[in-house]
Length: 476
Ligand code: PA5
Image 1 (cartoon, rainbow, N blue to C red):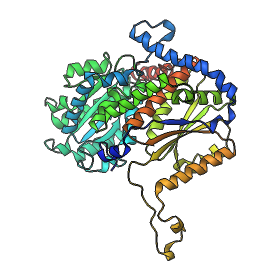
Image 2 (image 1 turned 120 degrees about the vertical axis):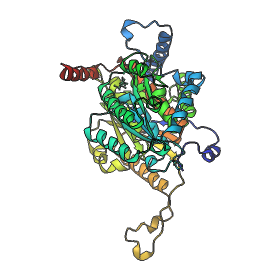
Image 3 (image 1 turned 90 degrees about the vertical axis):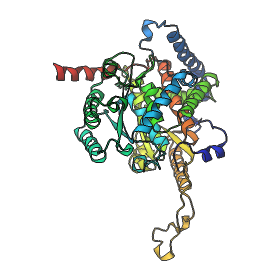
Image 4 (image 1 turned 60 degrees about the vertical axis):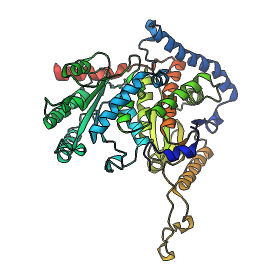
C-alpha cells in the first residue's frame, strides 16, 4: 500500500508537484515595509551561499569562512549525473538481496536523515511485515546513536533469537556503519559489539563477514583505516565539503535508503529542484527565502525564538527531529539561535496544545500539511443506533483525512483568533520527490539564515567539548 515503487500512484499524479510555503497568517504581524527592507539582505545571503560553493570549488576558502561545508547545495544534481550513483545503487541492491535485517550504526547527522526518509516513505509497520510484503527489502534497526545497554543488548538478543541458520536469507543480517569522522565513540563502540556478533555468526574468516558490512565514512580517519585493514568489499565516502547534518543526500542517507527500496533518484531530483527554485525564484515565490524572512523577522522583532515544526500526521515526526538537530547544531552558537521543537498533530494538541494556545508569545508554528494520504482513505463506519453512544453516526461515511482537515482548520482558526502565528508548508502528497524538496529546503533555509545573521551554520564546536571531556574520563 505505501511501498515505494507504486506505479499506480505515480500514474494518477502525472507530474511531480512543488512544495508550497504559505506564510499569510504569520505575516499579520509583519509590516510590508519591514518585509521589503529585508529583501536585499536576503538576496545577498542567497548570493553568499552560492559564492561559498564557488570558493570551495576553487579551493580558496578565506580564514573567516572556516569551516565551510556548502557542498550539499549542488550535490544532488551532481550525483544524479555521476557514475557514482549507479555504483552505490548496485552495491546497495546487492546487500538488499543478501540480508533480511539491516543494522544502521550512526549518530546525529549520520542517522537522522535516513530515519526521516524511512518513516516518511516506508510502510509504518515495515519491520512487522513479511519480506514479500516489504517489497523484498530488509527490516531496519538503528544503533550506535546512544550508549544504552538495554537497547544494545535487546537487539543482540533479537538477532540471536531470529537468526540461527545463516544459509537462509531470512535469517541473515548485515551492518551499514556510518561515521564521517570515523572516530565517534558511540558508533565505534556499537560497531565493535555488533561486528563481534556478526563475525561469530558467519565466521570471522568467512566472505560474509566482509561482504555484509558496508562502512560509509570520510576519506581519512579510524573507520576508513579499519575498513581498509579488514578488507570490506564495499566502502562509500561521505564527500568532502558536506557536513554530517547536511549529508542526507550523500551515501549517508541514500545508501541505506536504496537497500530499503526507496526511490533515491526521485529523492535527489526533489532536492535538485528545490535548489534550482531557491536559486531563481524571487522573494515572495521562493519557499526558502520566504521561510527565512518569516522566521527571522518574527524572532528579531517579536521575540519568537521558539520554532515549532508542527507535522499533521505521524509520518513526518522524524523529519521534525532531523530538523531539530539541523537548526540547533547550525545556528545555536554565540548565545543565539532559535530553539526548534517538533510537534505531531493531532497527537500533541493533547500535550503541547495548551501552551501553544495560551502560553508565552514566543512561538512561531509552521504546519507541515500533506494534501492526500499515500493509502486509500479510511472511512468511519456506521453502527446500529443502540450502539451509537459516541454519537459518531453523524460522521459515519466521513474519511479520516477529512477529520484531520477539520482539526487543521479548527486549530489554525483558534491560533489566528488569538494572534498566535502560524505558517503552512504544503506537500501535495508524501513521496520521494516531495521529501527531497522538503529536506533540501530546510537545509538551504538554515544556511541562508546563518549568513543573514552572521553565524557560521557549519561546524558544531560546542559538541566537541563533551567529546573531549568524555575521552579524558575514559582514556585519562
Ligand atoms: O552534523 C554533524 O556534523 C553531527 O551531528 C555529526 O553527524 C555527528 O556528530 C556524527 O559524527 P560522525 O559522522 O563523524 O560520527
